[in-house]
Length: 155
Length: 162
Image (cartoon, rainbow over all chains, first blue to last red; front, side, top):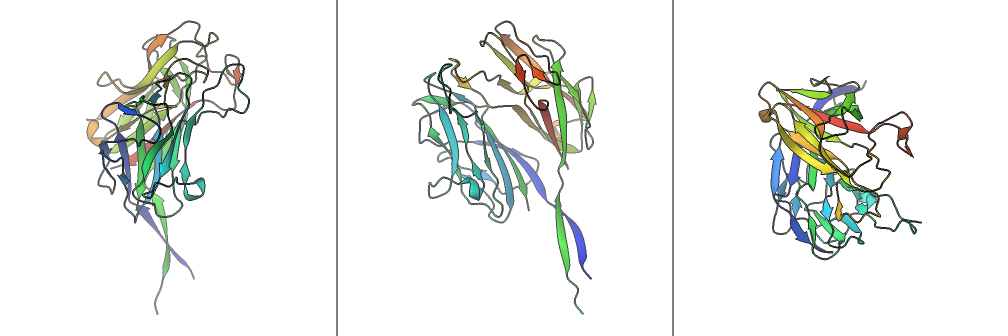
């Protein structure tokens, strides 16, 4: 005979934002500095390095919504999650990039749709710390305060 | 004898997917229509979400709009009608050929904590500003303007009981 027990997964929703616009270029990290949450949680941010520390024993779904003012109106942008070693977290490991590609009206073949959001949802326990990196971004662009993370943490 | 049992863990989040329909007016202050089933303690009242104390809520909404002139922009956001304040706003994203330097997030969103709500809070997805003319915000089963799409634009509501 098999017994099942239903147990609630302790769940917290966490919002991580920027308090002001950040001037950034390709290779820079998003420097989040503000956290609001529905309860206690295991997330912290380092506003100097952009590191987002997660509780290695909990489960996460992280959605980053990107809001960028480009310094060049013919430029594109792309943001991706990287691990503590600076390596981009692949889709196989739960990392999905956000991308917006410029194109002209007459030359749009092969240009992907914009995604706007970067997801990190590992199947198992998370990599930590992680950072959100501008892998493509025109020099001296602005990452605007509407850029935000919504994190669902479950134990 | 020892007994072992399997544990099924379930998140405490209650999720709702709500249709985000044609706004009451294509003008500043127009609020997008809301229809559908709301799970949990929130409800729809006059195209507003009525949130009830005792839970926290995460709202995100992706409106759709069309401008045949391919210019201008619309700023819309989550508006707290109870306290008369925008909780978050975003700007419509036009075609990637745009010379508008801003490439905004695809949706407006807000995390509303239980402590933010006294008894109830009414929020809506409201138009904050419009630049340009000729905007078409009428959502039909076939799409909007010359755009065809499958499915309607939506508002996603996550409720987490305290």
